[in-house]
Length: 393
Image (spheres, rainbow, N blue to C red):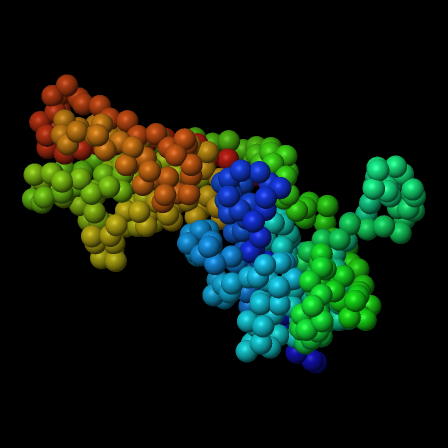
């Protein structure tokens, strides 16, 4: 039995996406709570038959890229060129040392590629050496002249919409790209067109209508609505936490270091706000509580920063195909005063969870000098989390 082909994925993400409107490069914009580029990369990073994932980015976007793909297993990004074609060549050259048998070239602006399409791409490239996913044309297509007058109506039975990932024998497509660069050809709109120019026969395989490219502002609005509709299981969870004061000179509250005359008595850093939020998220998932996932009897969590607990809870939502819609925390204490720090706390929670600031609320109240909080013996926190999950009966 022959060994399966060594497959690499090349993700092209160096473009500016100007047609998508204001908001920066479209591949770094959020859609349904996640960046476009993270959605585009993840199916390849998680695919058991893809051995390497090579991103190609604009050097000006290095910081945005690092934040967007944190936690995804991919090669170190390489800088792209002035055109898509130059960026693909840069990515192919970066893979020389790994020398894959097959390379899948995919646009980061297509964030909805599935494992099934990747399977078909690898299989098709193994058979033909050059193959692209396509979708049927369902509308009548008109060819027009410079004045907009119709000059022909092509038979749509022979037309297809080209998608990515486009799959090739690595050595052959690398050679074709090098030849095009030497010949000064930089006008190819996709790798299939370049392969045709190089004399290759390009086969097609079944694409996916959902594997669409995000190009205009309307595309983002439509796909955001589609994804939201798919997450029809709306759940709310609540959380509560309390910690007593002890010796110290600061408190960690909602991820922010707050100078104080006391510290928390706690196994971890004692961040009551984040602990309550973690329990709220886990409650919405019906997935236990913070103590069952991070038992205080485990020395591993002694002194641990609570942002790790909140990150974990968010990852539990993502693993279920869901998203967090809103987080709300109320802090109950006499001191320290939370009002001046509220926006910093909201910003820190938003940073940890990847939510927009408008989806995070932090409030504070006192207990009118009643009870342990009124006596300034500790702080309590209540939280709620609203999440959306795919509906499963």
